Structures are given as C-alpha cells and as structure tokens.
Length: 458
Image (cartoon, rainbow, N blue to C red; front, side, top):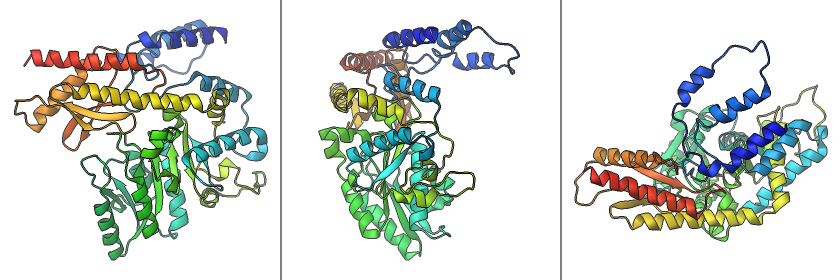
C-alpha cells in the first residue's frame, strides 16, 4: 500500500511536466505486453515499475493541465480515496436493504444534483458509468412511459451536433435508424427550431408518433448550447419527452453565467450530467436525473424470488436502471462535496469559462484565425484561413490538420480537431481543475509558433 501510494503521489506531483500526449509507441508496447495466464506471481515493485514507468506514460495525459482535447476528465484525488474506501469495504448498494446508510449517501448525491439542476421535489435519478448509459436509460424510460408496447412509430428529434451516443441509444432501445430525425443547425450550431417543428408536423401527418426531443447543453463538437427554453415550449406543445444532454456542459449550472446560458434546463423531463467532466471526478461517473423519479422504476423493475422485498420508495438502484451488479459510485462524489462544499467546484468552473474566453480573444487577434464557434461555456472551435490565399475546402482542411499536429508536437498541450460541416476545425476545451492561466498562455504561444512555422514554409 505504501509503495503504491508513493508512486501515485509522485505521478500527481509530476503531472504538469509530463508530455501532454505520450502515446507514441503505445501500440508497440501493448503488443509486447500481451501474455498468457500467469502461472507464478511477480514481485509488486516490478509491477509498479511496469505500470508507472512503461504503461501509464504511453497515453494521453488526460489528468494533466495541458489536456485541452475532447472533454477532459480531472481525476480528483479525493474521489480516488473514496474509491479505495468503497472498493475495500465492498458493500452492495444496488438494493437499499443491503446497505441502507451507504445507499442513502448515494441518494443524497442524486438529490444534490437535482437541486443544482432546478428540479422539483419528487425528482430523482441514478449514477451511471457515464453519459452513454445515462442517455440510453433516459430514452428507454421515455419509451416505456410514452409509447405502447409496439413502439416502432415513435420518432426521436435531435440536432446534427448531438453526441452520437444518443443515436446509438435509440438503436439499442429498439428503434429503427430511420426513426431518428437529425435536425440541421444554424450558423452557431444550435438546432433550427423552424425545421424542428416542420419535421414534427410532417411526422404527425404521416401517422408517426413524435415523442422524444433532445436538447444540447454544450455539444462536444463546438460547445454550442441549444435554446433550451424554446425547446421546452415545443416539447410541451407537442407533448414530447424533453431530454437534455448536459454531459459536458450541465455542471455549469453551478455558476451564475452558466445558469443564464442554460436557462430552460430545469424544465426538462430528464437530464444527463457527467460528474467525471464538470465535477472533475475519475472516468466512469455519469448521472441521469428524472423529473418524475418513479418513472425509472416503472421502466426497469422486474421481480425475482431470490431478491429482497422492494422498498416502499424508489430507493433500490437495481430497480431503476439496467444494472443489478454495480459499484458504490456515490462515495466518489459524496466525499469531495462533503470535504470541500460546492464553492470550490463553482469557482473552478467560473475560472474555466474565463480561460476559454481569454484564449478565444487571443486567437481572434491572430490574422487569418477564424472562430467557428464562440466559447459559450468553456469549449470553442477555430481554424486558420490565410488571407490572400484562395485555398479550396480540402486545402484549408489539410492546412489546419497540419497546424494541429505541429501544436501538439510541442507536448505542452494536447488539442483535438473535428469536422463542422465540411470545415476541419481545431478545438479547445478547458475543463481540468489543474488547468490555469499559465497553461492557457502556453497553448496560445504554441499555436502561434506552429502557425509561424507553417507560414515560413509557404
């Protein structure tokens, strides 16, 4: 234990100086590590050497301050301590009667999230492995609540920027791919309300059953926030289940500015949050909140003779989700919130919003840099379009891929790109509690230097 803790602490202390992306050679190492079932034991120090000196470094430094790619996961150490406790005591919380006090702690956490989201009394939910399972559970619950047993006329509405796990959820829930309506977005990558209503009306005329509407509280591609208030109105008018995917951006309701931007999120029927994003927890911590908590039990409850009697209240997580076997997830959020209170989380999110705005303002000053999406929360997209050069779409895309590669090669930050329509864009997502102004200055400096290299070769 002491040897492992020493390595862990050393790893955390050296995170700022580690390469932002050490994955080069990782595939070759993985092939070398393939082995048959061990017949004899290996000394623990040798295994620690393998992990911390060989395996861990050959990866994206997702817990480091320079990780500005995809959606960063913080890996708060308090949560690691909580996991050590939860895994060691190994109590089962899927059934309330098996560990009532521990199950109650997880119920408390869900109640806190509902309070932050602005949900009323009677709301509830559950913690999941992440946004994918949370979105799947929400869609399955809505299907069971709003559609008959033969549900194949049900249609689902989302924007062309909605995370692909929602479409996957629809397929896993049994809907044909043709029942998922991708609504085009406007210049700011927000769902087109006029086209949404046209599609709903057309589907009704065709005898289909519009029933599920998805709003984005911060997209992965560009950080765009759909007009949630207006979507709530449309959902009410057409009697649709209004679902908000806030896996990336939902936690920003903690801040005053975030609550203004996300106005209408509290009107949703269900909401996905990912505490392993906006609450800086380790990967594997998602959350689904439901306005009508008993709907979860109605959708998932199946009796068995060997199970203990159900509780009078919807407290058995095994009865409200697809999972029977599940870890005690609640402690990894309960412990940090109890130790620090919600204030430090709010302050950290406010800082990330400010850093994204600062970086966007700095990049806007570089001649030829176009912001393709503004940082509504802490994520934005941009590209370089050299003035005076008539490059076609593919030429511009190659140029920006080169810009990204040269920036990342400096190893102080790691960015990723995406396609926004036909345009390749670079993305910056600021969401690590270890990322501060000094690292953002490095990011802008490396982007400038990489661009100067490109300009010097043209």
